Structure formats: structure tokens, C-alpha cells
Length: 105
Image 1: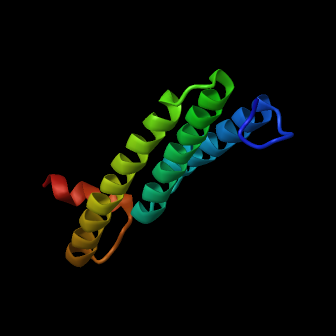
Image 2 (image 1 turned 90 degrees about the vertical axis):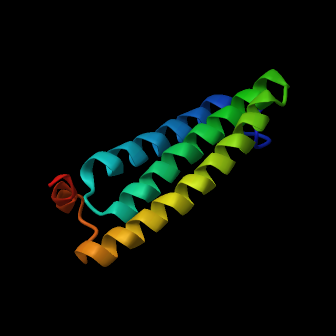
């Protein structure tokens, strides 16, 4: 049993793994804070897809309940992160992660 009729569970899990590693690569490579925040959201969505897929395979709702809480936490994280990014941009006039070293001084 799969999320999408006619699609095997391994295909959905492979797709979720690809999405997760794209987000991880973006998190490691990119320097812009907005892109880093979007990559974290991409990784969380890949985990959500995995939870829903396993929940559908095992025919229980526990994975879908976990996804609900992950979405709530991701929304709160995005709101706080965006507020911090706006405050940082007003102070430094840039969103480059290398300029965060200035905050340590």
C-alpha cells in the first residue's frame, strides 16, 4: 500500500531521500540565510513524506500525527527564523552567513 495508488512505497521513499539530500546539500553549500531556511524546510518535508509513507504502509495514523506536529514546529521555526533574518538584515544589510562572524565580537 502506498500514498499514491500505483506507485510503489520504495519509489516514494527514494523520492523523499532525494529531496532530503538536495536540502542537505543546499544547507551545506549555500551562504544566503533565506536559502538555508528553505533547505531546512525542504528537509523537513522529506521527513514528513517518509512518515506518511510508513504510516500508510503499516496502516496506522501515528506517522500522520507526527507529521502534524512537525508541520506546527516548522511553521513556528519559519516565523522565528524569518524574524531573525529581518532583524539581521536591518543591522548588517546582508544575508550572507559569513557575516554572522561579526555577531561574535
